[in-house]
Amino acid sequence: MKDTMAASSDRIMLGPLVAAIDQGTSSTRFLVFNAKTAELLSHHQVEIKQSFPKEGWVEEDPKEILHSVYECMERTCEKMTQLNIDISNIKAIGVTNQRETTLIWDKMTGEPLYNAIVWLDLRTQSTVERLISKTPGRNKNHLKHKTGLPISTYFSAVKLRWLLDNVPEVREAVQSDRAMFGTVDSWLIWSLTGGKSGGVHCTDVTNASRTMLFNIHTMDWDPELCQYFDIPMEILPKVRSSSEIYGLMKSGSLTGVPISGCLGDQSAALVGQMCFQDGQAKNTYGTGCFLLRNTGLKPVMSEHGLLTTVAYKLGRDKPACYALEGSVAIAGAVVQWLKDNLGIVQSSTEIENLAATVGTSYGCYFVPAFSGLYAPYWEPSARGIICGLTQFTNRNHLAFAALEAVCFQTREILDAMNQDSGIPLTQLQVDGGMTSNRLLMQLQADILCIPVVKPSMPETTALGAAMAAGAAEGVSVWSLRPEDLSAVTSEKFEPQINPEESEFRYARWKKAVQKAMNWETTEPITNGNGTCVRLPRGPTQPTNAPPPSFQGGRSRRALSVMST
Image: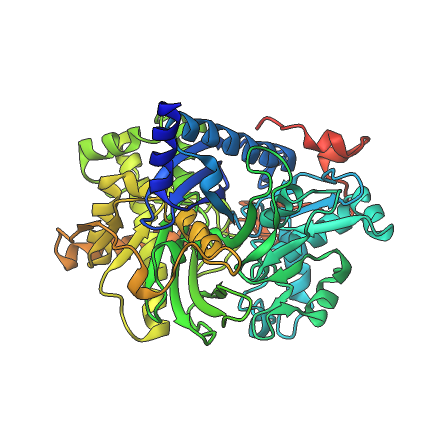
């Protein structure tokens, strides 16, 4: 009895706790924070399998995603119990997620109607080309005045259009009023709050702003945009703020706990880095690389290839804040590619050691345009290229070139952001899994010629979701007032090379990027005999062809994870 009382008194001293679900492209995590100190108390992580059924296609199993969330929750609760922390102190749960990834499911059965089409996926290239050809002057920015986005394979509307065009189960479910569309946040919140038994079908403004169906000025679904993509509005989730109680957990160890925060992963990192002032920015290094700069209460339209997006809306009655975003498709994914496809490294951590042994790429440049090029080019026809090879080049140089590629891509979007804002950043706040690579951080400072600042607690994405959840009306255990925010300890990487060398290397990189352009083309070309030949389309497919995972079978066949 005495031990129990001592344990309970220890637990009480911790005060209120807030948890976050961080569902990323390559893994799911569940993390628990102290609402008063922002200290990370416990967490659990599960990797997510990606399947590549055809070249350029990237899918994930929605049920695996959901199961991974439950597994991370339960394992974390077990760990906390072992630490003598009372899980009843968890007062709220926030959700943060890979954005744009598109799901559609049957609201009667709760079953997905197809695999989740991941944001990186390129199958919609022909859909995008068709949509752009319909615009005046073939202008990919035709919808930018409403959405802040170019027409691109990246965003959810074109993925949803592809599902409606190609998957009979989806069409049938829409016609019989059984279909629900959502990004990963919607699928998780609907499932966790009851699913087919009264689950809440909602999304937040940050995730909605990445669909191309959302008007960033009216802050709601736009009938004209839905008409443009021919998307029925009744399948869309209700749009809510990023910080309010959406519903309660209906199963598991945390039954009854409110889900009260929701932010797309890059917005969550902006909040977690406490970039609440106009002009503050952060760069997140994950599967891709995402630089966001808070532009305050007004959406700023980029003239240099950046996106205008909703940063956050921290309460039903609070104003929305906006951000300029530079999106790079391939960052950490290039390390994964070196490991899984080439076998150059055995683990992600090994790349730092390999690159450090040479300290240079020896003139080798690697443009990892596996999914075309995102910001600032928005060029889906680009493909990956490694150039500047000599007989001297070895895997160590290639490892170094891969890390440099992440830094050069960041430099490109930082330059664009400085041009758009007119006020150059004097330092860069960073976060994400790749920031544990100290060589990468030093390279980044060298290539940007400004200091790079990394917080000691790297889980800023999950922290942002927890902050939004804890601050929600009806929870109110986390204060977002500037004077109440916890001080963050950080490490600073200063530039160590002269600016002339940095500029020389950057100019060579830009030259390599031009070589990667217009690679995947549908235009006729001439062969050596002067005969016209038409190149195959590559990773796209005629819109009337059934997807391979559904040929001759029902939807459950698509949900089996396919090998590469």
